[in-house]
Length: 538
Image (cartoon, rainbow, N blue to C red; front, side, top):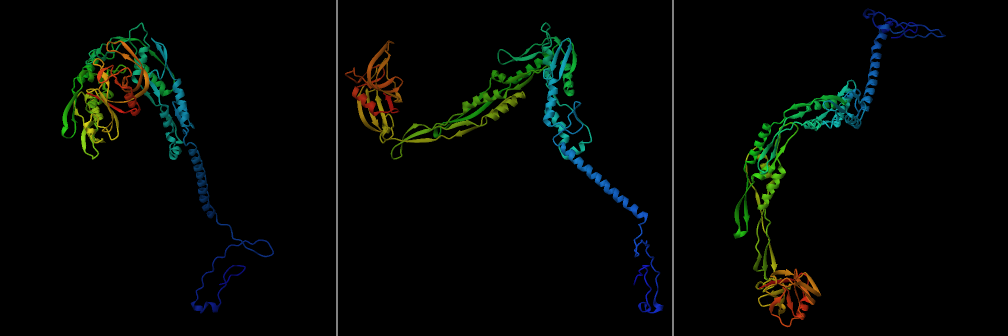
């Protein structure tokens, strides 16, 4: 098919192209497109403008695009605006009528605290005063107010939604009920007797609770002051209130107080008893014993507390710390530290003597639980009977190797251990190393009957080559002895020392010291050391 250059219409097919004439159906020629000639040396053609209805179809697309662009711009702006208020109060946020928009948490806290501190309640009428919120027991919680103001800023979504609404924040306050009553009483002048509430006190016997009577008198309605303070705190604005003196009976009557006293005395009457099973000794010597501890009336009364708040009747409580102290004191009667046993063994490891018998210990393991149970029972007006739970602490043994043969001496010395034997029966001093005598026995003069030498096991703690010794005679008169040589003290003023003035030994006659020949005293002085054991015996 071909197009004519001028008409753009297809040419009719030739006979050879169409085939037999009888079989050809010639379709109508298509409509030629409209062309518009333009001037010029050669003819050219352009399509005609689209119909008007096609242009109208394009307008919704342009409108949608514009709307989308506007919405996108608005979204970007809202995002930036909402992001700006992260951690800040949103627009429209107010506290007691004060705009806090754009403020941080600390700024809101400082603002609210400052306003609260400036709030006063001016009292007029029968009494004149200016009270702060603190005077009347009302506290503004600036921290809670700031938290509430910033709550709509907590998340991006809440910030975005909150940009289009107001956010009034209520001022959070707390009230101490009895503070206003105390302040009201302080407004009553000294020439007017204030009403006095009945109370409860512990009597002189320290066992019985009694009523301290109340009396009528002048009073001021504390609730008027308290309400004014609460309103001022909520609005963060100072206010005025008028009060009047009225003669009224006490808010807490004698009957009210008596009921509390009776309750306290019923608590005191409840029995409080703790039992414990204790074990003493060990092995075949082990014994089991039952112990019981009961709190007396004065002790229980000391545990009970009486609290009076404002114009309310007294309330009772139990001082858990005092109960715990008493329980621990009883537990100490049961507790016992174990005693380490000591056995002396010879060089072959054979036990030749038991110097100290081992004893198991005991400890109470549930003192805190018992104290808590007593506190709860007494506070409920009930008696208590319970038991200490005890644990046994097994005793241990220490084996001390002694010199062979030392088991037959007054002191079971270890091998090579230095020690001094003072035998008051035969008036001698003997020096040993282990079970071997290295000096003596040496005759000495021990204490006279009026000033006897001490007995027991001691240790040398001080040595002097010479000194002047002073003391008292049996009749109380003083004595002084100069130039006493080679002194070895083993207990207080008792010592072994030389006696240059004596020519004989072997009897009792000193002030308590062991008088020795000078040469023997020097030998002891040179041989012994600080800590050397001294055994004095009969």
